[in-house]
Length: 139
Ligand SMILES: C[S@@+](CC[C@H](N)C(=O)[O-])C[C@H]1O[C@@H](n2cnc3c(N)ncnc32)[C@H](O)[C@@H]1O
Image (cartoon, rainbow, N blue to C red):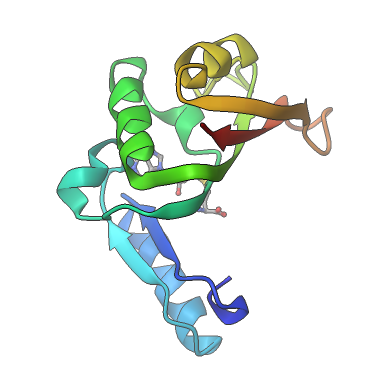
C-alpha cells in the first residue's frame, strides 16, 4: 500500500511479526510506520488521527472481550468521517486452540453507533476457516 501512495501505519504486539514486516518493507524499498504495540491502546501508541482506511485481518476476533471496547474507541478516534474499515474474523471458534470469535451481531452492536455496515460476506475457503468479511463506513 505504501508503494501505491498510501501513508501506512501497521501495528502488531508480537515482535516477530513486526520484524518480518520490517524485512519485507526493506526488501520492497517501502517505509510504512511499523509499531510494536497493543491495538487496544492506540492513543498511547501515538497513532494519531485522520485515518481513512483501517484493515483488520484476524486481530479483533482474538482480542479478549473486556478489551474490545477500548479497541473500538481507539479506532473511532483515529478515523475520519467516510473512512472505510475492513474486518476479517472468525464467526465461530475454529478449534480448541483458539478462542478467536466475532459474530455479526457483535459487529453490529459494537460498530452500530459510529459505523454503517456496508456489506458482510463469507470468507474464502469456508470449509477451512469459519470467517466473515465486513466492510464498514464511518458516519
Ligand atoms: C491473523 S494474524 C494477521 C497477521 C498480519 N497482520 C497479516 O495481515 O497477515 C493476526 C495478528 O494480530 C495480532 N494481534 C492480536 N491481538 C493484538 C493486539 N491486541 N494488539 C496488536 N496485535 C494483535 C497477532 O499477533 C497476529 O499477528
